[in-house]
Length: 117
Image (tube, rainbow, N blue to C red; front, side, top):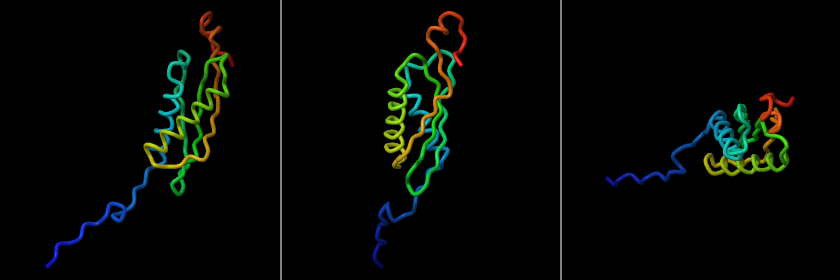
C-alpha cells in the first residue's frame, strides 16, 4: 500500500480571526502611531471592528494633545492600523474611522492640570 499523500496547508481548513483579536491589533497600532505624543493621563485608544470576507472595517477613538496637526495625527493612526492589520491578520482594511474623543491642551496641563473640553 502506498503512503498517503501529504495535504497542502491551504487545503487543510480555514483560519478565522475573531473580531476582538483584530480590534486589539488595531488598538495597539493606534497606540504605536501616537507613541511619544500622548498627553499625560490620557485614555488609551479604543478600537472596534467589523470583519467580513477577509476585510476589516475599523472604528477607533483617540485622545490627542492640542495644539497639534490633528489631521496629520489621524492620518498616521489610519496608516499604522492598515499596515498592522494587513501584516498580522492578513486582512484588507478599506475603512478606518478615527474619532477624536478628547483634546488635552499642553498649556492647560502645565498650569492647572485640567482638561480642555
